[in-house]
Length: 187
Image 1 (cartoon, rainbow, N blue to C red):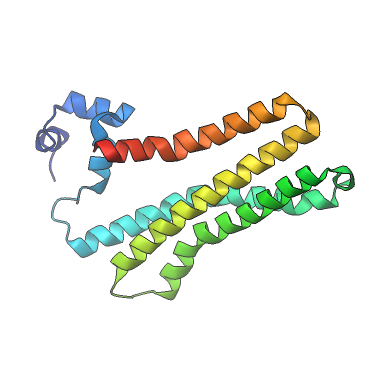
Image 2: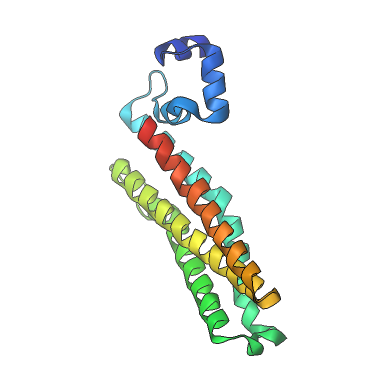
């Protein structure tokens, strides 16, 4: 197994440069490190490792999605729900359906993995699971933004709703999508 210094030399940098790049995402080093095969790792072992990594990443997202979905299922049974406007009902339905879709797509890789257990073509499963995870993340971002709109509109019903919803949507767009895509384009 190569040392950190040897790995840095292979990437054309120093160990300190490697540490700095991992810390702040410069030069696409995070992406490069992540997609590099482990020493002595076969293609099949790499695919297995990447599939395990993807499934572990989804385990981080799912509890939050499930809590949001449970909250959304309880909302119509609250006393104030009868007083919401048509726009707020639309926001609620958008949040509910996008959270449902996000849940389906984020859980799909685990279901596919289980159904296709011991399937020799794990690489196609990995590629499909990656697409499902990205689509699920998009739906989750839309659903969470709709919930932010609904809650702020119920509380403030003014420009605060627009600002908070816009900032929320912007954060999702930049942090979840633009930064990784920029990093990928650079590296």
